[in-house]
Amino acid sequence: MIIAYALFAVMLGLVIGSFLNVCIHRLPLRESIVWPASRCPHCRAEIGAGDNIPVFSYLMLRGRCRACGAPISLQYPIIELATGVIFGGAFLLFAPPLLYARLVFACAMIVLFVIDLEHRILPDRITLPGIALGFVLSFFLPPGWRDSAIGLVLGGGSLWLMGEIYFRVRGEEGMGFGDVKMLAMIGAFLGWKLMLLTLVLSSFIGSVVGVGMIALKRGDMKYALPFGTFLAVGALIAAAIGDRLVSWYASFYY
Ligand SMILES: [Zn+2]
Image (cartoon, rainbow, N blue to C red; front, side, top):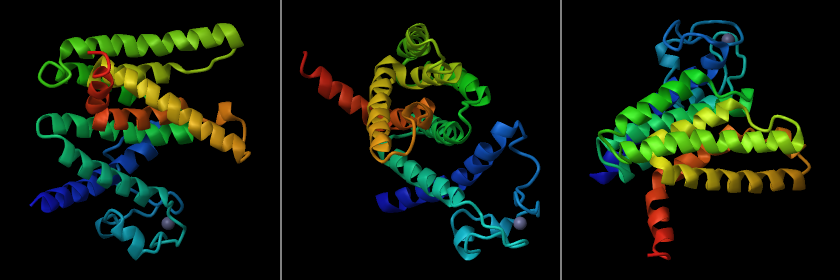
């Protein structure tokens, strides 16, 4: 039974992942995400419903546009699969109604992850409604409105402060305000404890990846790492297992 449930969640995630691909592609271009229908970016041919089945269509078409044969980015099926896996995990970890809030949150993190990686921006069209939605939901769901409000203010404030210090010390912009708004959104959805955990996790993952990239001589660390990408990974981990991590950590003090 639990397997059928998880499978349903993965299938739902694949379909939602397909929609997230549209958001990822169109939000940076400031296009509508509901209209028009998907087109091949190469020949502009409309992609029919039969060729728009998550992952499956990509495999059937062998990663090429049916009309012009141009290669379709592997990114599409990867994002669909990743969303499917994350949905499956969320269904096992959370019960409704918190489940729905965490799914919406996860979708936002996936979109921000990719857009920041590709364009070095974190669109206000996601972060600002995200801050509002996270705070409103906290009146009915964990972490509760107080933790959410503290998380929102502390999340936005702490990154803003770090950016200011970096600017004073180094004389250059370290972080954009997009990161500030994103962390405020994470604080609003997850509360201040998991927001702080997100900051620790994403800084840690960022350092590990950064050191790895320097070791592989893949370029300058400062330009290689959009922080929002790591915030998204940190936030997904914090949302999934953060409560257990926090209570484990607190058990050493109480
Ligand atoms: Zn085409």
